[in-house]
Length: 245
Image (spheres, rainbow, N blue to C red):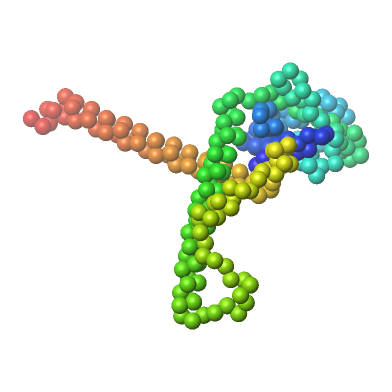
């Protein structure tokens, strides 16, 4: 999932993906995404190049470096612009010895930006809309339930907690008066709270599951078509025609 990472006086979003033995590091300001893909061997070779006296297991070093990429890290993290690319520099101490590592991140394609940022945000809006509709339905049912209790003679012991029946139109009108916080206008990335990050991760998993179902259905359809074609060819073969005469 995307996480906030404060670098100097700016806030960025960062995410790392481990797939088939390769690690992809993404960093974004919501305008662009930069990324670099590394294998564990790439990590180790770069560690040795930047820290010649360093010793350690490849996987352990890789996981330790990735653990430094968070806002709670005591590491000194800098982001340096180099043409269209970015160099993410991490300085820390490993067993008391100064340690440095650098990621060389290039801008991703517009298609990847769409996959990593735009599409998940659209899905998140759709999910939140669905959640709102379900909540509205639940509130309506609760109002019916409460009304049933009242008709049977039930009374509230405390009048100060009594609420009016839920009205969608009034609710939406009241929500239209909610202003956008100035802090979010100035720095939209602070909007990516832990709750939003969790929703993003859930959306990505659902997206992957849906794509797998679509691909599976497409393969089954192709297999069915191929089977039908092969059957038609067998029926029209000279040997088959001779047997039917």
